[in-house]
Image (cartoon, rainbow, N blue to C red; front, top):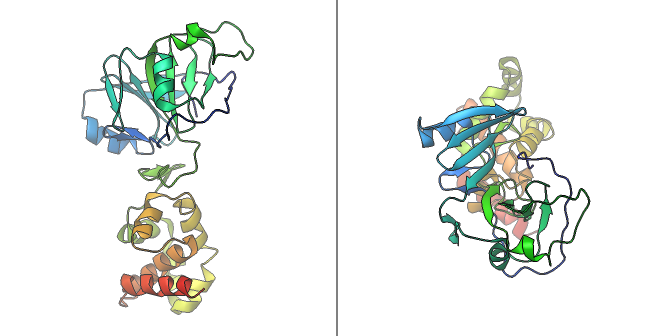
Amino acid sequence: MKTVITILFCLIFNISFSQEIEIINGYGEIFLGESKKTLLKKIGNNFSQKKINGYKYIFYKNIVICLDDFDVVEEITIKLDSNINLNNIIVSKDSKVKDIIKIFGEEWGYYGKKPVFLDYENGISFETSYVLEETTSKELSTNQNFLDSKIISLVISESEIDSDLTFKNYEYIEGVYIPKNLDETFDELNKVIKVKDKKNFLKKDENEFLSSQHFGLGKYIRNEWGLWKLSRLYLWFKDKGVTHPDDISTIILKNYFRKNKNIEFNLNNEINYYQEYWKNK
């Protein structure tokens, strides 16, 4: 979502990249999807904040951070008043549009009128000094004035590319906290399950609980904790060899049930079970 200005138009050129564009979801220690609380722990007290046109912004050094309605970082703008390192790619403070295209490739779009933004699907767009007066789409790929215009800032927002890396650092997705590991899932489930429901769950035997909650709590875990979106919780399990969201949600539910019932739970046994299951499938 581009919150700096209204999108007026977008033109995509079907030309191959000059190089593969990597997903970029943060700058330095600041990441998309992290809460304002986490952000302020990192940047300290040297910032100001302002609400502009309904959007909440935090101003920190040469960085402007836009927060969504849940006070989660949804956009990061870096003013190009010095050279910056973007995932080991150096963007010069004197960069022009043609320099950016050489680095990031020819498959770009543009949006905005005053000024025009050079836009890539990996979530990066560059604010240019070029002013487009027309309100209708115009060919810019051969416009020398545009190609020679200066880059003023770059904007990091959510990538449009389907990748394992898109949500890997997100602390929150659509306002919901994403647990970092199995231990955190227990605490987070305790927050969303009512005491009365918890007592009813624990009256069941394990198999009954798991089957009854596959489309209840299990669905909540898969959808709200971003298992289909390859969230950081999904990637934690993937690193351990479990990749199907149904399997992950069952492991989380079984851990929750057994921990409440003081029954031993062995994660390695669960991992081995699902690996063998898919091997023999």
